[in-house]
Image (cartoon, rainbow, N blue to C red; front, side, top):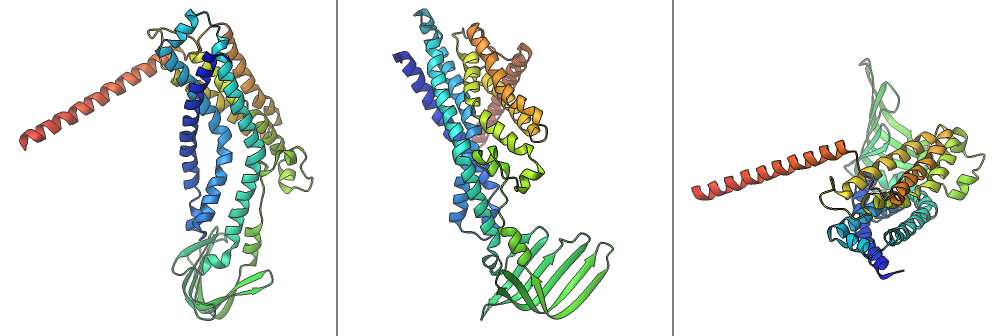
Length: 400
């Protein structure tokens, strides 16, 4: 590899790593916040929460890596064009391959990394995540003995324990059950206890009442000396681990068990998941080609209607949306599998045509003019706001 090629790869790699870290941090934060209820609702420790948070990372890496790459390539080449480095390379007689080769080597490495994570790491991380969530829901005893807080046991089922009494007894038991359509049940008992017998778990409530209310407004109150609330069905359902096609390994997807209930219900989803995993890695190469077609040639600053980074990201977003659309449709319509592979292949072919023919891939002129005018109006409006605040500050100081 030539000195110039190493220089281009080094600059692109530095921007790629920085963009990857920041993008991963943003996407990871949004996913983690959606799972904060694992601690707040199920009473799990912070260590379990952080383990679940770490297991999310492999699932977002294959999506984030191509976008970090397109940002790195477009930004690097745009900066080199602004510094007239691309013009110098052209004047020195360097071929366009001098720019293309280091970028494509970096894209190939990113593709291999995405493929390894998507097919080797992510399925096992998802399975471990399912196990943690199932175990947290199945740990009912540690869930309900926390005093003074409402806990969601199941959809439509809430429970509160007022206090813990000696001899493992519970005081002030409150249960709200609206799982049956059209009927709301409220249980209140002065005391009770959890009785375990093998796999059976029963909440035995003593000295309480049951309020039963229907949609028509009919209300009935039943007093009881003792009442057994069965928790076994909930425990067995909570401890079961349901693995979706995304959670299975690639080897299993290629040869699923005929007894798999999920496979029996929707067999197309398994092959659709295989097609997505075998095509998703290619978007790093596709986005690198798009960035090269947009910002890979030396241009005068007067020719540029819009920043190449914005153009490259806009085109990449459109291509990736097409890929997600095809993958979603392939779950039910197997014919969309051709589109899953066709989107990256056609996008790559178009970008290669632009590169080979020494053309520049740009947004339509009308779009570029609209975005330029919008950016100009936004800049003028922001300048006016800053000027107004500056005047107010000056008048305030003069009055003082």
